[in-house]
Image (tube, rainbow, N blue to C red):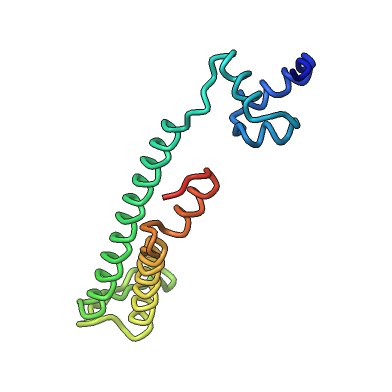
Length: 158
């Protein structure tokens, strides 16, 4: 029969358990068996059941994906609005002169420099949309790279 744990060692193990460290990691860190860690946790009525954590993680992943999809859609909508402005009437204006007067003139379409700015802004918005699409692309696991990494860090597999 193994010798009882020193009170300081038991306290250190219990501290790691309460901090959320896994059973196996705690056992390795303190040089004790997995069953010893499980027994200490049980005596303190602490469970290593992570099903609630898994459910919360799944919900957070789904929520983040939905927000990313909505943001991606907004980038796509903005890109289209900017492209539509290329062929809309354009008001050019300026302030100037000794009296700081305001002058404006309406053109059937924006001038070339304004069109270049619109196209650049539309392209950036579209690129952001595509970047998000790639981020959430299915790689065969059903997870984006970030979601797969997060599950891996949590020790979860699909």
